[in-house]
Length: 140
Image (cartoon, rainbow, N blue to C red; front, top):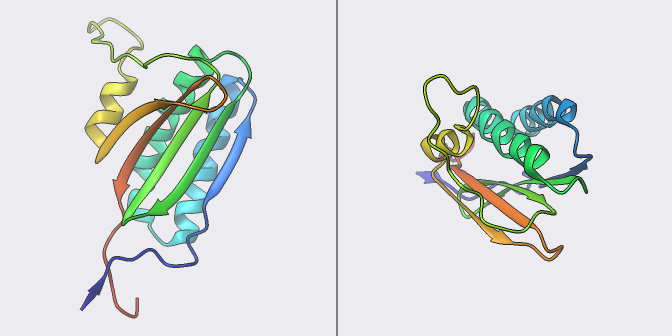
């Protein structure tokens, strides 16, 4: 018998950081810590990369008002939401081989089960991505 319901111990993580690229590494460490605490270490590398890309984009293209980050387990998924104060749809770029950036959303699309965006209540944008919550055997 398997169970795919999130455990009550999977408490959401929500942080707000200044719009400073130096803080992206701290968000990665926080994501790693929360996922490890949740016992889903198999998601750490993909979620760290997704988080780095989304938070990095929010810092780089955001309004300077800071970035909100939410990590939650729901409906058998791990959800990451990154919010900033800039309105408008994030755009995927198709970078040339020589370009040093411009691949972030393509990486997110490749790794995530699903991703998208919506306008948030601060007049900005929230971009989200999900990964499947690993199925656990009952009693584990």
